Image (cartoon, rainbow, N blue to C red; front, side, top):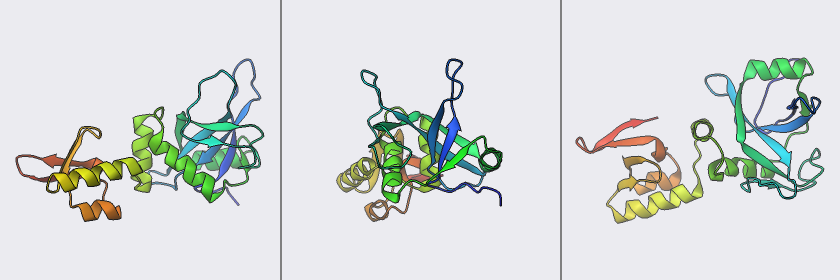
Length: 192
């Protein structure tokens, strides 16, 4: 039976260099398959003394059976892979399937996508579109601004302007960060 990637799967993927060609890193699939048949994966690596690391998601020993030292998620190396490519690599024994990450750890990893300062904007946008999630910080800011400005939002943080009722945002029913407000028509002109 061919491998079918799912959110929460852990894969050991070759990531060696010329000096250490057999090196492999743990990658976690953090989205389900999208309409383009792609998944977002993030890399986990060991924290080394004296080397700067992204603190958005630190994984302690024992949180996953493959983690043997204190580690972190390297969001700057996040990547999207096609479902068929992942299937071929696992079925061909190039990528090795490891035990799935726990739901608690997966939630922390996904929260880190929204909070990391190092993830590429395109990867963060892909994650938001695939999952419909935004950070708690963004939701709090939106609610505060909406209450103060009679439902008209102007958010330089997100680089967008939108007009949305607070109740919709509080329920998480809309992606306000992807809305564009047209000041001449006083309406939302696009909602991705």
